[in-house]
Each structure stands twice: as structure tokens, then as C-alpha cells.
Amino acid sequence: MKIDVERFADGPIIRPNMDARMGDNVNGPTLIEVPGWIKNPLGKYYLYFGHHDGRYIRLAYATDLQGPWQTYEPGVLPLKQSLFQGHIASPDVLVDDEEKCIRLYYHGAPKPTYTGQKQFTRVALSADGLTFEAQDEQLGLPYMRTVRHDGWYYSIAMPGQLYRSRDGLTNFETGPNPFEPGMRHSALLVLQDRLIVFYTQVGDTPERILWSEIDLTDDWDDWTPTSPNLLLEPDRDYEGGGLKLVASERGLAKGRVRQLRDPAIFNDGQRIYLLYSVAGESGIAIAKLKLSEI
Image (tube, rainbow, N blue to C red; front, side):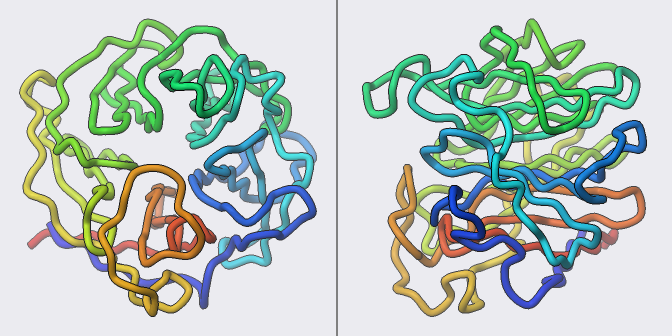
């Protein structure tokens, strides 16, 4: 398979400090088209995103993918309602049309940040995409990204750990981890019997977006990704392209750095888009993907 990338807008669609609350750390995008069963939405598209040490999940909305995008300053799922302490981050949103429900997967820790507590993922549910009710169950490791395929919900969490669940809400089974230990953030796209995994690797110089394929016809214990292919590097100024070239590290990006992080996939049924964090965690950009067989 070949994947071509066309950057979709001249610069990021989400920038630091777009409202009085959000701050200058911007990462973790996840995009949906608002379903018709939600009445009086803020816009056609909802873009949820995070802060590396967030006290709530950010939300922006627009009527066109190119913008203009406007932030919903209150955000969604405040920390005190998340069943976590310290911080919450890394949203991943799925639309459940059957139940008329928005699922928001997110991670945090049971005690305040920097106290050595292990982080994990929970899910929160909403009927309108704005007001969410957190569910107590611990689903898996942080940075879970989830897709539905053949009667299962499959997830990949950092650093490449596979999970699956029948309902995507409870009883996630732990599967293999077929990726390198440096995997950071991932995004998933199901194409019939193939899973395309977009991801970044800690320690890359620069950190950039890669992709691999997995054959879904194999037993999931035998899922093996192909060798990574390069998708996108930080070569534009707004992506950090003019900054010093150094190997990336785990954790919060300290200011603008020459890194791409947090790939996310949006498929509207006709076109496939890639969202990603630029210059480390300094904004969110969007690109159009064109997939073709070789």
C-alpha cells in the first residue's frame, strides 16, 4: 500500500491560547462529525483535544474542517468528574449510533500528578457530546485508541499493547504487544481485513509519524505489523521544522520542539484525514490522506 499526504491547511487549525483557559500545551486530537441525533450542536465537527497535564478535556468546533475553529471554553469532563486526580489527557472519541451515545476514552492517574502512580484509561459517556459521565472500570494502559471490527472493539495503548472487548466498555482482554517499546501515540484505521496503525516512536530524530499494516485475518495473538513506513516529518516551520534536530524523549514537550506527535484518523466515509500535534505539543494540524495499492 502507498499513502500520500496533502497538508490540508496553511498552518495549524488549533493553536495555543485560543481562549483564556486552555494554555499553551496542545495535543491529543480526536475528531468526529456530530451525529444528527444530537440537537442544536455547536457546529458540524467536534474536535476534542488535551493538555499533557490537563484539568479538563478541550473542545473546538467548526462547520468546515479548514475552519475557522472556535474553542468551547468550558471544555468537557472536568477533572473532578473524571474519577481521576492529578490530570486527565489523551481523549479518543467514538460515536455509537446504535445507542445514540458519544464515548470518550481518556487516561489519568488515581492520585495527583508526579506521585509515581501508574496511569490507566477509563471511558465516559454522553448523549450530547458536552456532558459526560465517567465509568469506573479501569480499561487498560494510557493512550488507548479504539476501533470496532468483526464483533470486537480493539484497542492499542502505549507502548503498543493490544486489547479487545465485546462492548468496548468493559472486560478488555489483554493481548500481545507486537510493537517496539519506544512506541508513543497511535491511531487506527480499519480497511476491510487490514488494520493500518499510525504512530510515533520516542527517540526518533526527529519524532515523526510512521505507519504499519496488520493482517486482521490472523488470530490476534499472531498479529504482526509490517516494517514501519514514513508518513510525515516535521519540515514546515509550524511543525518545528526549523528547530534543532535532537532525539525525542518521553513526557511533556518542553516548549516548541522539532517533533510530530499524537496522530489521529478521521474518516468521513469518502475521505480520510490525519490530525496530529505539531512542534511537540504546540498545536494541531490536519492533512488529507490518499491510500492506493502498489
